[in-house]
Amino acid sequence: MTLFASVLLVEDEPNLAKTLRLALKKLGIPTTHVTTLKHAEEHIRTSPPELVLLDRGLPDGDGIDLCTQLRAEGFDGCILILTAAGDLEQRVEGLNQGADDYLPKPFSWSELEARIRALSRRHVTYAKRPASSAPVFVPPAPELWTLDAQRLRVQGPRGWAELTPLEFKLASRLIGAGGAILTRDELLKDVWGFQLLPKTRTVDHFLGRLRKRFERNPEAPEHFLTVRGAGYRFTL
Ligand code: CA
Image (cartoon, rainbow, N blue to C red; front, top):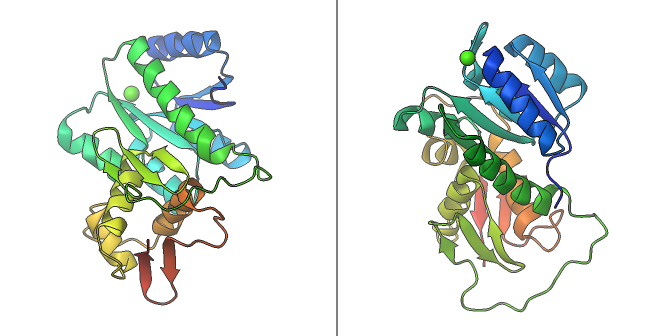
């Protein structure tokens, strides 16, 4: 199976970086390595990678700030945070800031490899689907829109879709609202846990991801709807 076509490794610890580069090379994933947020940002602007492996403690700041900024700017590659800051609160913070996954150090290579493979499966199914592929029509069934929190998946009209933790949280919040309109601010508070509300395209970005996963035609959504000037709502 195809793994990511490009990875940016942002890690300032030389030995760990070396080990990871070798391991990624063995998987056949072309990797660019930088050691600072500044260089990461420059690289992402010129050639956005499909996956960013992002350390938090970097010489010029906290990787999580780059994560927040990238999501606010609409970066839609995967972000996997690797860090010593592995306690629950910081893990939740990482996911709230738009990371797709979070791996506390020290970790084994086999664990990281498993996470990369899992992310790449999700990434491939929504990002790499050829535009011309015929949408699969499955008649509505009662088990539609079943949420499987254990495996972070939702059954939509095109079958089960595996989601990232934040995608799952957003989908469950919208599906669980029973058709009510939720405002952008409500979603930023409930799903992302923001207290102070940033000016951000995060909600639209994630809505776009859900549409790619679930809508027969993501350009003309039937389920995950934007209600102009009001917010968002889900319809069966
Ligand atoms: Ca570090």
